Image 1 (cartoon, rainbow, N blue to C red):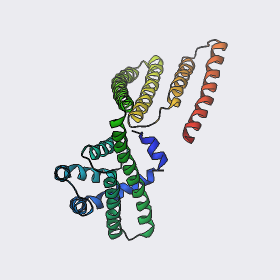
Image 2 (cartoon, one colour; image 1 turned 90 degrees about the vertical axis):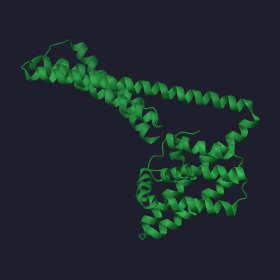
Image 3 (tube, helix red, strand yellow; image 1 turned 45 degrees about the vertical axis):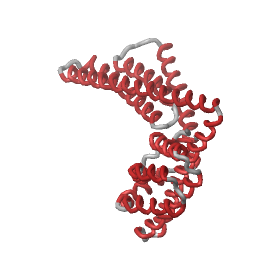
Image 4 (cartoon, rainbow, N blue to C red; image 1 turned 135 degrees about the vertical axis):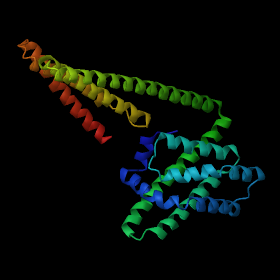
Length: 297
């Protein structure tokens, strides 16, 4: 299964598209039950279903409603893509032809088109929303078909099946490790906030000379931990690993040392000052170059 950033990039699914889908959400929510009924009526006309397939579809009406809702909830993340993948695998499991999936996505597209034309009079807004809907439905179609063909290939290839097992296990293990990192970072951040609060209390009690420096150091540590926590959350949601965060951590560490030396009014060593200033300059340049590169990806 491909990841969120890859699919969004390939289909050019932008923040504006997400806003358009969210704009549609209250309109489509009113039509959910009507869509489910029309969908099943169309099935009986388009396909000759076995008794087993008919029973399966009737038992999974709730899943169809969930799929309809999630198209417009503005969350095209890995969790949503995993949901689509499972639906595509289910179509294979119950011996539906792949044409079934393509035809029903086409039906959903035309049905939604009609509702959009009925509820939106602004031509420019309607065009923008229709383009966003096309992108999302195309992603849905690709992911579910991909799952269907993956299951088909795995039936005849033990190597493919073993590779999929290894990849799935690795993804779950990676998610577990990232979750542990998030939990640790949350704990460290809370502890740092507590230390910062204690520093502020001491500062108010009159220990200004020493506690101002300590409080400033604690504040910078909190900032670093928040940045690391934000990065981990983005990775779990399917975002890319950003090297710039770790460069910024090193940069903040040198800036903190320079501030402490300055605020303490220490004479210090010229070589030491030169080293810190050079490190800040070099890290700042590297940080700028990396951020610029990441922005172009």
